[in-house]
Amino acid sequence: MEMRPRFRLEIPLPPADVHRRLESKLACGGCPCRANVLGNHVEVTIRDDLRHFWSPHLSLELQEAQEGSVLNGLFGPSPNVWTMFLAAYAFLVLTGSFSGIFGLVQLSLGEPAWGLGVAIASFLGCAIPYAGSAVGRRLAAEQMELLRCFLEESLQLDHLRPESASCPPPTDSAPAPARALPLAGE
Image (cartoon, rainbow, N blue to C red):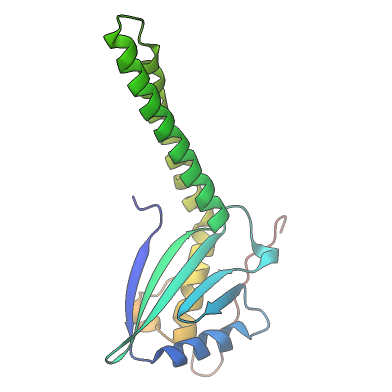
């Protein structure tokens, strides 16, 4: 089970056209997303008024290709939440490693090796942030779908994915309506 799903798309558009399409989609009044563009790197997030702790973050890297562009994407939690998970893993692994070494020294000196118990508990504790990430993925699923739909509609890539209730193909007669998530309490 991937904690941060990755994807790669080959697009028959140059990077400048990809940027232009993303910006024009963001300009719509009801767009639930916002984006920061830095050269060939694009960060797409949920609008501030719709965001919650588990809201996803879509990081895109554009590369020029012979016939258009290659888009490398990464879905994940916001950078602050991801840093918190990495810090939790680092703390648990370092605690487990150092206490395991300490426990082995205790064992070699013939003392009670309580350090080994701490090491085992630390490594088992790594399941806590992993379980938290699984819960977060479930809580962020609707907004991840929203980011996916935003990307597909912006770049007109509807033919690459099967239809779904949350991201139906736009009709030719009218532009696709902007999707907004309900606010808390609605």
